[in-house]
Image (tube, rainbow, N blue to C red; front, side):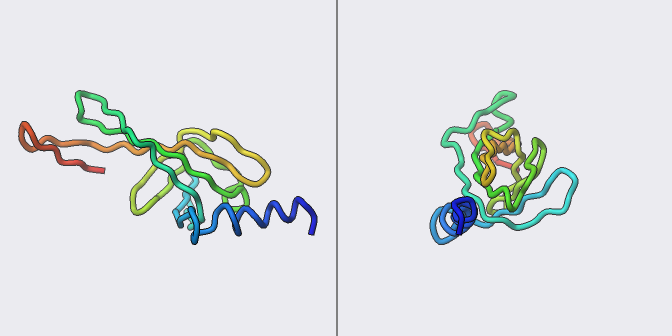
Length: 120
């Protein structure tokens, strides 16, 4: 096996192994046609808020295999644990893998002065 073949095999067998850090997500290009792929997802710890706390913006990073998604792009959709996320940018990409910056926007409704209800 060549080094290139070994590196390609390691992407799914090692880096995107669901018995380790990866999980199944649904990746849907902006043109449609979603598919389940294995990816490593990491959500940023601190969300941001806009419009006086009415909008909550969560951010995360998704590492994928280029064999699964050959042309990731801004605006593509990703479903992680039943939550819809949007691809904001490709932070790096090589011949085997890519890292994507994701965003999820949630509306927060106020039911009382001290209570908030989140809607995704």
